[in-house]
Length: 332
Ligand SMILES: Nc1ncnc2c1ncn2[C@@H]1O[C@H](COP(=O)(O)OP(=O)(O)O)[C@@H](O)[C@H]1O
Ligand SMILES: [Mg+2]
Image (cartoon, rainbow, N blue to C red; front, side, top):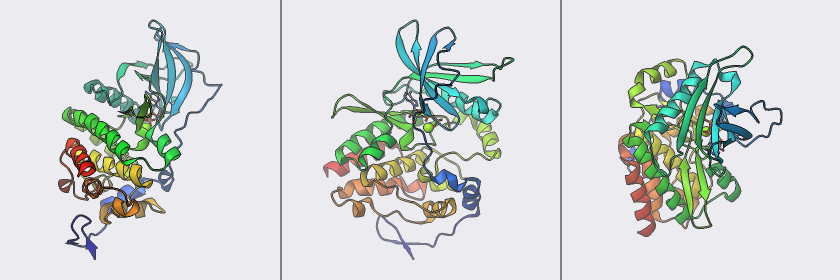
């Protein structure tokens, strides 16, 4: 028997759906382990020292993702520094990876918000006789601390600080959603935190590579047909597991998972393999965060549980509603 985590009402038995199983199979269990995204310093990197477009001198590698590497570069004419995301050479012929880059540029071009990474430039380099084609996305350079780094170091975060950061992240996503951009890959690796001093910090949402732009539905269908799954298992909403339509509320679920993790030091669902994880996200009510952290205000715990509702209809309608619920929970 299952009970609703919100009000204890008995819930109908949920059966694992075949599509959840299909998605789980597409993901390898390897993806359950956190991907290494720490900076690597490769002195043989051919890009280091190169000047791109006559404007950007590549200095060092500062980040590594699935399909791209992030470099720090000097903007020669201005004398300041930027971050450049470069498509890895091994993905140069991969149309899906290239499309991810184009989509990220298009998504970022639509959003202007202090809590969203700013994009400055985008260019593609066709393949030449001894060089593979590549794509470059020039962005604002951040201090290099991801929310993942902070969680690794501090394990759990102060409640007020968590709410402060979540309010900023929610505000960023609200603007994205208003512009019809759904992030679809929210996780602590994709949130950077700029620290001005101990009390003032600024969250920046990055990596819109999986962002869904409503105008490019055809493109999304193509990508889905190619068997790509959007998102990272621990943060994926039930509808992502079940291959159902996604919308802003899919991002709200991921924000619920992130907030849960910031406050309790663990994600709501963990499992030995992807199949089990899929089934938990689809069927199992999460353990209320207040049970893992006694000093959590009940309102904050309830706000998180609402964001984690299995049915998108039961989640907050907008990220602003989620932010308000967290703030009221804190003061109530
Ligand atoms: N603008 C930036 N400034 C500084 N570091 C960045 C910036 N963008 C990304 N990074 C670092 O690079 C990592 C990978 O970047 P991301 O855009 O998430 O690429 P991917 O799509 O490959 O995951 C991030 O987790 C972060 O550590
Ligand atoms: Mg990323």
